Amino acid sequence: NKIMKLRQPLRQRSFSEWEWIQCFTNAGFKVCSVQNFQNRGSMYGWIKKYNVSDKNIIEEYRSMYVHAPQIFKQDYEIEEKEGNVEYTTYWTILSFELEE
Figure: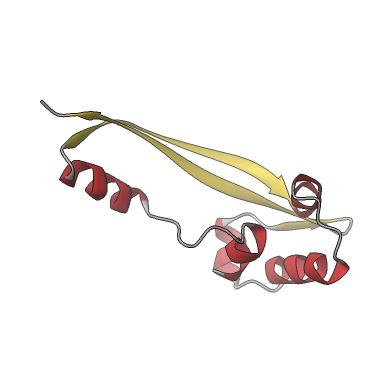
């Protein structure tokens, strides 16, 4: 999606939880645990983390969140606050071990 490509340009694709599980189980591993986390992020945090100074990129980033489809805004809990855009990110950590 456009937002991820702008936020993290080196990321080409995000595998789903199911795709990771298939990949590892097909290689002889078993799932030990699945942990899901969520975190609040913000446009200002992204600007600082990646040292973004190009005002056009910043405005494009803000605009993508503000003009995103309603379902995206609901899923990621998008909020505008004093010029900043805040959102929720979701992470899954899987652990595997080799089956004997």
